[in-house]
Amino acid sequence: MSAFANAPSGQLPGDADAAIRQLYSHHAKALHGYVEHFCPDGASSDDIVQETFIRAWRHLPQLSADDRPIRPWLFRVARNLLIDADRAARARPVTVEEQPDEEAGTDPGLDQVLNRELVSAALQQLSPAHQAVLVRTFYQGGTLATVANELGIPHGTARSRLHYALHALRQQLQDHDAIAC
Image (cartoon, rainbow, N blue to C red):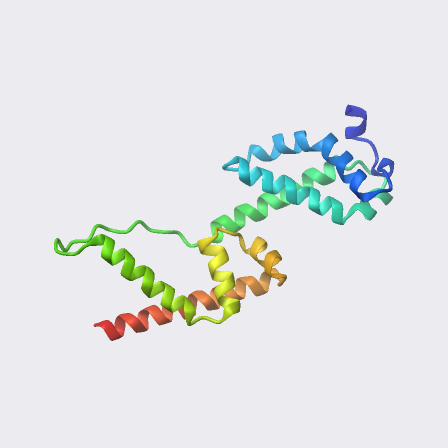
């Protein structure tokens, strides 16, 4: 098995499914071990490894034609995905814990319900494209790269839509506060 770990990619089977199965059986364990050192949880490391093999599948013709070993390529792709995930996590806005309500006569449960209704109404005012990016990023916990892939749009477009959606949402909530005062 260690001979295959550094074997040239030209030794892959011609069938794409068989080639990916072979790559996975020979490299997945080592790749998981590498990725787990940098991921906060098992699900994140599984996602990185899965995306690495998806990219290998997409680049199979180039990998098969090349005489270089595949394992370094897989580790480089995983490393790049880890860097992208870290950058995405650092780019997210920092959430601040809510301060306790100073007023003794208010019901915090009622305030939460009213806030949810207010945000929900403000979200309904956004365009469907802005809504989709905002909901998938903040409420479903997706990264911008994942959201862009899901929506079939470029990463920059997803980032731009998120920016303008947050701006519009913030503006609507400020306008509501101005009316309420």
